[in-house]
Length: 269
Image (tube, rainbow, N blue to C red):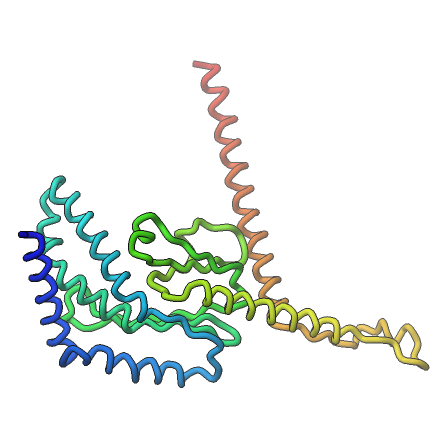
């Protein structure tokens, strides 16, 4: 009974914060609608737009469950969790504003993610974040769902980069996407199209000898070959990979040199 009263009190405080910040229950959605339209109009072409609205409630429940679990652990450890529980209505207000302002869409050349959310203390303003990921630098789009996420039906989308393999924590990750599989399919189809266009462009750039021209003219270095942006990005990725491999080799050499210096000292002792 006490837990039901506490949950009702949290919901009441959350609605009060939303009413104060958005000017009414529908204020948040009415503000986010024009903002989304303006953001989409800034781009020339939008191939696909991911959705967050359908997953809003599931995302809030998942984040609330995580917050409560951490709070209970910290109450047992240091007692800080009590302040976290008091802060919970503000936390839910920030998360709701966050997911309502999110915008994730695919353009012919990049993946664009925009978000605008309040700071931990909303009275001090908002934080704006905008990230553009060029499609030629994308290796794969991974859909993840942990145990706690599966209980609430929440998915995470992780974008892997081309180049040397890095830990998954270094990749760009977005939680709360309502249609992750459709978004992944759209990105992979667009990547396939870009690679096909690049390959066909390279084939067209290969000069063919015409009748009446010598092979010397055909092999003349004055014929400039056009280089597409995809091949240039591939070369940059290869150079970065070689540079990182060189750094790793130097570290291994330094390690073995240190070990060789330690062995005579041990024998002398």
